[in-house]
Amino acid sequence: MKTTRRNVLKNLVLAPLFLGTNRLMAHTNLLDKKKTSRLQYSINAYSFNTELRNGEMTFYDMMEYAANIGLDAIDLTGYYFNSYPEAPSNKELFDLKRKALELGLDISWTGVRNDFATPNLAKRNNDIEMIKNWLQVSSLIGSPIMRIFTGRHKNKAYSKQDVKQWMLNDFKTCAKYGELNGVIVGLQNHDEFLFTSDEIIDVLEKVNSDWFGLILDCGSLPSDDTYREIENLAPYANYYFVKEHIKQKDSTKVPADLKRIAKIIQSSNYRGYVSFESLKEGNTKEIIKDMFSEFKSGLN
Image (cartoon, rainbow, N blue to C red; front, side, top):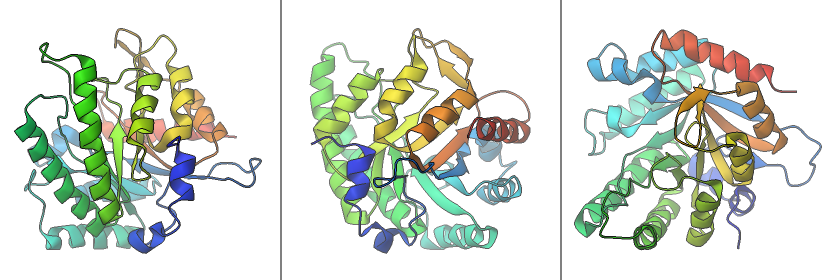
């Protein structure tokens, strides 16, 4: 069975009971291909990494900014909570949830950092437990998808195929916890272990779970033809990250054609969130605002 975004959404009839809203979920129109995609827009907390870590900015500040420039949601990365890797208190989560409601925003995404490429079984099991706890956080805060990583293959004593096999088992375990909490476990391609669209699709299909999906990071697909790679992955995408760069085959960053990416996403009939993430030096608020404007200018 091909675990594309289309399969996922077809089987999520009861998802609104868990999530409280239909519009949070990525959606492909199965009935009328002539209709345009319905995009919603978010911002990833990592854009303000320095400011959030040194205290110059809070999640509340980020919410205000997102609402002011017309975004629909925010991504709240787990490691900007003071408690991380432990889960925040319910009060902290519910205060954020209430603020989002006041501003007309969704909290569409949460994310953690894990390493499933390590041969250390205890460490992988600890990461699975952390993911389990943060899936509960995601459910409480109303986020329908939570980001995880592969990890980077560093131990030469094990082949990539060895690593991939235990990684698949770990992903399947996480997907089961995702199902229990009504939250999709979203694998973000991150130029660490899975480098091509074919590799990513192979993992998605082998995990083969409606509760395991893809957060398509357009800026982390090293290739001689990144835009073709994005097109290959588009049918599987549950969420998009758009950065100001794409990567060449050797991982060198070059400016992204945001209008072209917008057209690829729109032509796939995607219905869901596109999240902007800036890694450039400079005024991040202005950079994100310009990215948002340029992306939208590429839509029909």
